[in-house]
Amino acid sequence: MTSSPKPADATAPEKNDFIRQIIREDLASGKHAAVRTRFPPEPNGYLHIGHAKSICLNFGIGREFGGPVNLRFDDTNPAREDPEYVEAIKEDVRWLGFEWAELRHASDYFEVFYRSALKLVQDGKAYVCDLDAEQVRAYRGTLTEPGRNSPFRDRSVAENLDLFTRMRAGEFPDGARTLRAKIDMASGNINLRDPAIYRIKHVEHQNTGNAWPIYPMYDYAHCLSDALEGITHSLCTLEFEDHRPLYDWFVDHVDLPRNPDLYQPLLDAGLDAPVAKPRQIEFSRLNINYTVMSKRKLLALVGEGLVSGWDDPRMPTLQGLRRRGCPPAALRLLADRVGISKQNSLIDFSVLEGCIRETLDAAAPRRMGVVDPLKLVITNLDEGHAETIRFSNHPKDPSFGEREVPFSPVLWIEREDFMEVPPKGFHRLVPGGEVRLRGVGIVRCTDVVKEGDAVVAVHCTLDPDSRAGLPGADRKVKGTIHWVAAATAVPAELRLYDRLFTVPDPDQDEGGKTYRDYMNPDSVRVVRGYVEPSAAALQPEQALQFERLGFFVADRHDHRADRPVFNRAVTLRDNWAGKAGG
Image (tube, rainbow, N blue to C red; front, side, top):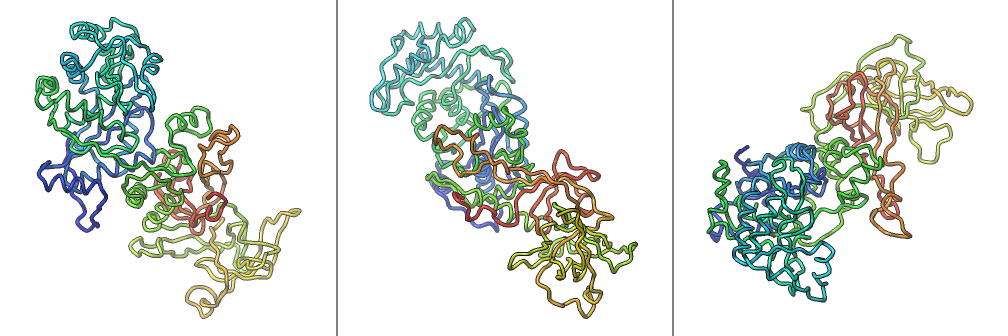
């Protein structure tokens, strides 16, 4: 799939982080005539919010500099990969608002990788090693002690070629041998101490089937994939900084531009092979508190049933954030706010919530709903009274238009909007007190109906002169509350989500506790409430603000007009501000 990148928005302010400065310098010096980047996920899990930063960076640079961006799946470890993840990743990238120029896979280049490895063996720069994984670790040394040469390091080129071709033919069992680069066992950078290039794995691959009993290691396959695709700037997170010398070593010693016979299989298969020497540049990853982003821990949360699945709205996965109601524009805004730097930092969860609020405040229409209903009966209106009241769909944007909301004498209001014995400063409905019903007028509480100690209804009278357009409409009262008409309200399921963990750092290890011990028991609360008819009629994934309650989204899987389900994306204010550790 090939498409031209969208041009940069000429009205947007120019971004000037250190990566973009490098790119501008490379273009100005003539080092590169154009820019080409890529997003290269491994399809062994669902993407999370940390990946969103990398997606926005790579595709954002493509848009700004008019260069193509590839989506490439690093599918070199088939035992951990699944087509389900491939499709989810493609969906996530598109949901974020980006389209790739070409869809590639590391497996597209397996023959090239193999030929390149043969070249390294022929040049005396790689050898077949019979040490097992534990022995390799023992020979590798430590950060303060050099490693020792493998006893198989000095095998002849002929013997190494024989053994490697037999590895390729599938003659040896898993783990029996590896192909290793011959670099420097005394290097201060442990990554250069004769790293593995190939390992034996008799595992079926999702794209190549059983054609390959050996698979390349990530450090080897990744850099050559970049080179073959003509990637100019290979952008990755800081944990790969120590891998950069190895990245450059493989690119330099395979030297694809001067060995076109190596990548001839690509040309034979009709694939483009621009071939370049890419430059790896590292940046800090996106870390957010009150969550975990390790794939192992996310998998455990799903596998142990601690969440409902990868798209559980409490999960930091893009699928979870999407289902919760986080709009893609909020993640793009977050990426801009966090910025690009070399300094690792921990971003407070409230920054993400603020981006969601800001985005939805501008984009979400307003509706009325009640999550904890209490009946309010207006006793001075006829029992059969019915009318409609016009409401603006967005108080800040007239282009959203208006809607008609049914009104009748029996309403549902929020239980917390009435108190028999109010504390000081309570400005909503109390016995004998007045409050304004949103869009209707002023009501006075005349009676409280109870069953035992529980309040089941309040009776009120409506001041007719306080209706819109009448002389008393401007009469001042301190409180205004929202409502839905009981006669036309639609019962709805409302899922109130909060942070998944109770502490900023769930990975902390105090007294033998794990992240499982810090799970927030109030991270989801499912309530039955009522919503106005126009809210129930919204389509799945359509966002809205339930006035005074928060920003919600119609659930993408479970919502139906006759059985509405809404997920709360975020409250109207930061409820965690001032909490201990928050």
